[in-house]
Image (cartoon, rainbow, N blue to C red):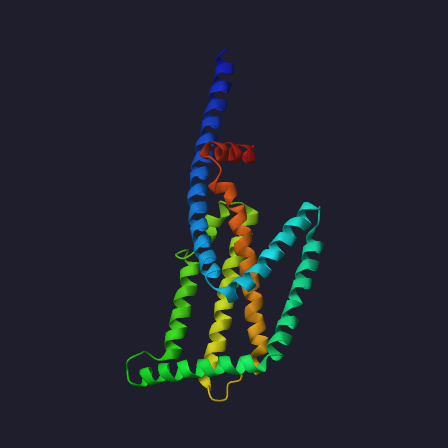
Length: 247
């Protein structure tokens, strides 16, 4: 009798420990999901307020939906790779579109040149810091904030949301950093020789930036939909799911 009581006691103690750990994990998941959702809603708001950005965002939305449908139909990794290759053909199409509208490119260059003259003039008079140093410092700070989990959830936090969501979080962060760096490189190239800078010669750089923007928008849309699993789920249900996953 004492033996069975001991076994039941041990089993109950283990069960309570598992329940406590599962509950603590569920609490963390809820808090992390709410933080992530707040960041995503902020970025979605910025995109919706800009017509040009929304057009790019919609391409990412379409891609995310196609991925979902492919998986739902039983597609595997090969199907997803094939889909990505098809989407990457957008780079060639984007380059053709940019090259087919030289007048618009020239008008954009003129706008940039006017703004640059103002910035350089203020910089020379000591009213503004050196634009190159300012851009580099700003991009480095933004990148570090992303990596440190100050403007996005950290990799450790993302791991609480499961392998799939953690992977998308890391991809989004890296794609966003790469896009920022590509934009900075293009701007610095422009600042190095503004008089001879030609956007037509930078169509490859522009198309790469737009491609990264599509990747970012795809991940934002995917995360926005998937994170509802945690934000809308109750703590008891999340706790039970965590317990079941460990059995």
